[in-house]
Length: 82
Image (tube, rainbow, N blue to C red; front, side):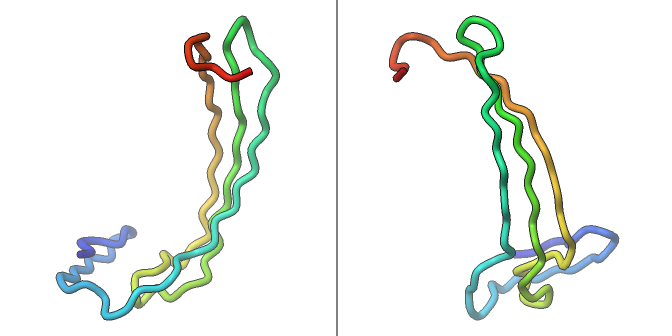
C-alpha cells in the first residue's frame, strides 16, 4: 500500500505490486572513532542511495539521496568483548 510519494505527488495504490524486485543501491562508509572518553566510542557514517530501479513500480524514488550521521555509544563491562 502506497499512500504518497512526497513532493506533492498524491498517489494511492491499495493493491500490492504484481511482482517483487530489488530496490535502489545504497552505499555506506563508516569510520570508527578512537575511544572518546572512558568507555565511550563513536562512529561517523556517510551514505548514498543511487536510483537504479523503476519509479512506476514503486521500487525507487528516482532521486539521489545522501545522508550522514554520528553515533556515540557507551560500552558497559557486562557482556562486552574486548
